[in-house]
Image (cartoon, rainbow, N blue to C red; front, side):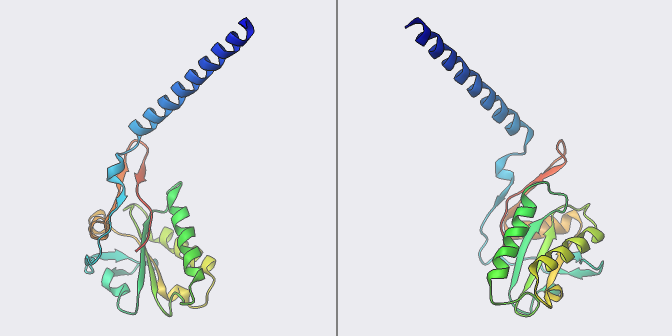
Length: 182
């Protein structure tokens, strides 16, 4: 009986230690990350986007957002090019969904990706666009696939209208952001 109690006590001590470590890690992660409410995707059905907002496209041309609308439906998603986690998952998921459609990007609809990081460059956007179009794998897609960069005010205006709420954490030098597309 004594041996059993010894193992039971050691087992309880290990469980307590494990829970303490997990709780400590969770509290540290929570303290190091921006508030969750700062990173959410709010449905804004019927909300107009500020189409006069100006961005740089993947070729370096300065164009208002409206230049990418009007030729059919548009799929819009937000990302940033140095994102270590979520953005590549969103991009891959978007590609997977779009490949399953009979409709083709560039012919039937357009795709717009807007970087939320105002330090992302046109050169980075060009690489992202080329990779996305290559992985999509359909002829003519480059004509309808646009990867945009812009200043902070432009990015925030479109993101706010779309209900895409994000925040920058200067300590980690990362953006806390939701995922999804509209």
